[in-house]
Amino acid sequence: MKFTKFAQTIFTASTLAACAVPAFSAEVEVLHYWTSGGEAKSVAELKKMMEAKGISWKDFAVAGGGGENAMTALKARVIAGSAPTAAQIKGPSIQEWGNEGVLANIDTVAIEGKWDAALPKVVSNIMKYKGHYVAAPINVHRVNWLWINPDVLKRSGAVVPASFAEFFVAADKIKKAGFIAVAHGGQPWQDATVFESVALGVGGAEFYKKALVQLDQATLTGPTMIKTFDTLGKIKTYIDKDSAGRDWNLATAMVINGKAGMQFMGDWAKGEFTAAGKQPGKDFLCVAAPGTEHAYTFNIDSLTMFNMAKPEQQKARFFPRIRITPDDKKINETPR
Image (tube, rainbow, N blue to C red; front, side):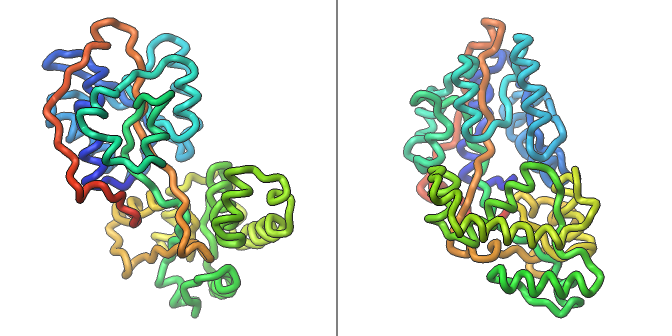
């Protein structure tokens, strides 16, 4: 997770406290899937922020990088009538939960914190259901990154690729030198992550938007999409045979440990390098995925707030908040 001053200002203890018991021993239960080494350190920072405001954070961590296991657990809890105070939910899923009528309105916090003025609309719109805030943004991730072990590159006689033509030249050299060229975990969300970066790199931003956002049928079935799948298929030939089911952080560890040369992954991967004591620019490199230097695909981690079953848990307890300053308005677009 990338925590910026911006995110820390937006996400204060008061946001979760709005759904907590209004007592000195207030407690909030948070369901999330931030369980890798780097993610766990970030969660610890959130807990510190809560504790500083007198709120106890009850951890409900469910392992699984894509969040499928966490969403299954969340559905079970909501159906049983015991929803957690908040849950890590992304994008369209927030709207789906809103349709179920189980989300808490946190407009009071958002209005006092002037979220509409501080957040870009592309972010605030995702945090709202029918015009009302129901979720607090924690970060904005850039997804289209390529992570590289420079020592593997050097020992292979390869150079950092800027295009897919250069990528395959580098991959050939890395493979010939006895390393795994591309570290990957064969899970659906990881496959989708690579596919989207390839689509953006092969076809550009306009193609990406028409095909994957607007779902234009002519674009989806056209020659550029065919080239995208051909490129993706070629990348798969550089992935080791044991990749099926591998968690993303284990694939990152392959790059960290010098077993593999490159990995397509979002900026959350930096937390794993940092947790391993690695230095950017020296022990690892992070560059835009081939062909995507001037484009930016993103996702947003947020904590979505749920209505509590007990009446006393609905009462709000607001603590003094930090005001957002002009310097905080720009989302940090660098990897964490």
